[in-house]
Image (cartoon, rainbow, N blue to C red; front, side):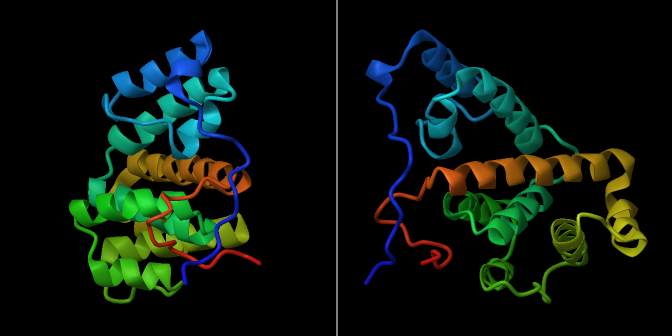
Length: 194
């Protein structure tokens, strides 16, 4: 039997009934790196209820996802680490295929989903995992974790990694608070709290 899904706290707006500010936000999202086929789902569905905030958030997201110096494999891996730590169902659903396409191994994704350290992952992914877990758990990063990541990302890449983690924490909070879930026919990544 499929897991019970909590009802979303906001309805997904029908494009025909959006006001001018909402339409402008949707057009900004579609005219960026995400492309014309974006539908108002996930965090975008929430941000359409606060379009000014949505403009700023989606612009930062476009940069974090598509324009940093991190290789897509590392960026998507960091996104999955964040989705797992927050148990953000929609984020996990949306980014597992992207991570696989970017080269994150299925065994690594399965370990993350189960809440385990991905022991067989490449060294750079393991360093990002340790950095991410430590940052979210202690709100700090030790010299050891910092040096491991900085050794292959450098100054700009390390700043960008922190930005990706912060942005996707925002996404995860948004998705969790407003109960934005994957489509009904998609398997949930994690058990929902009772």
